[in-house]
Image 1 (cartoon, rainbow, N blue to C red):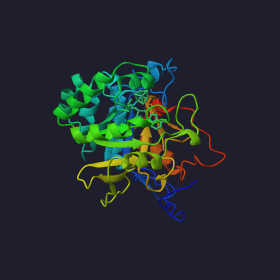
Image 2 (cartoon, protein in one colour):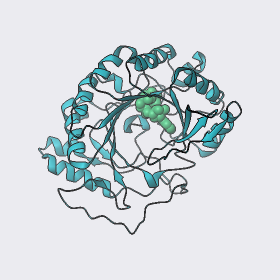
Image 3 (cartoon, rainbow, N blue to C red):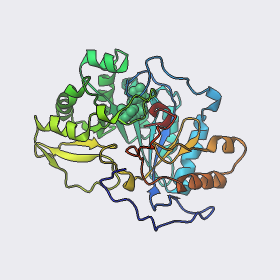
Length: 349
Ligand code: SAM
Ligand code: SF4
């Protein structure tokens, strides 16, 4: 595995003390950023994520209820040091209880930063309610501004809904509005510069994400992905990019000032310049499994424990234990790398 940032010191081996401490792994990293998937369902079929026919959805009974989600988020914040909560999916706007779930998270003490990653379909209707629930920020996924290519990429003719959703997010003050884009060779790589120009014009922060081996059909190959280098070469043909001197911390995006700033563009080079050494994430799936990494092949079942009557302290301990075994890196470049069985839509990106 190659990493551009140094790995944590392997001599640091925190011991688990039952009932105490945050989410620390054996490599000394501390997870403070929680991603919560609220559903595995989606109304788009982005080719790098979900097959056109959809997937075998989770049975409703296996999904956490709104109260169960709120309880686990509360345990994360009150007992485990979670400081940021991002709701995702599948498509989180498909979850009817979303405003209530957001309101429960924003009412916690200490107040976590609460954000949402969405394809924005339905956001034009939902944005005011989400802002009223205290949502701080929003990330919208948009891979092209061309209607035909949008249809080709997502198997749905919904570009106008996404654009309306973006406008509504900004009008509701869910700012800065970030736009996430994944590029595919021969499909929408030509959209890199138009997407940047669009975001500059509207005041959205654009970030490109390298395609990762998390597609449902396991069709990803390293040779076919559009790399950070490819993206930067395309953008540089139209704009002057200079590295943003601001401290990156655990943020996955490397940022560049566009034409001298202040606008920036980010690239999340999860594959070619992985940032596992600085990872501060922990994940909860819609069926209540803790995943210590996007690429983890093991999960820890909080739902069954919770429904069997586990109290908050026991659930917190289970979460701590699940964190200890987080691997130092995703290992995509290892010959032995195996894609996790859950696709991105069922993990929560
Ligand atoms: N449906 C919502 C959306 O699209 O924003 C939230 C869930 S989606 C899984 C979250 C993010 O993961 C999106 O920005 C999407 O582009 C990204 N994503 C999905 N599959 C990916 C893959 N194989 N590689 C890189 N990013 C991926
Ligand atoms: Fe749905 Fe998001 Fe996956 Fe696209 S990336 S299919 S919008 S979950």
